[in-house]
Image (cartoon, rainbow, N blue to C red; front, side, top):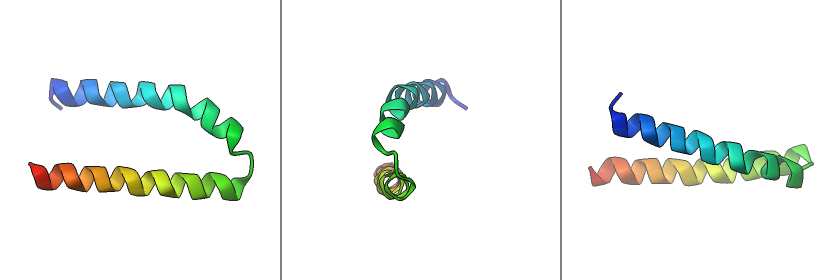
Length: 55
């Protein structure tokens, strides 16, 4: 891995650590958690595909 990728991965893990507790506390129903995770997965996949095609 390149240094840029390592720094990006560390940054994303740090953001996840900051957001995850609040996310879990507001989504106390399992169906709601799955729905929100599905939405976030779609958003992340769209961003990854966009970055792939830009390069």
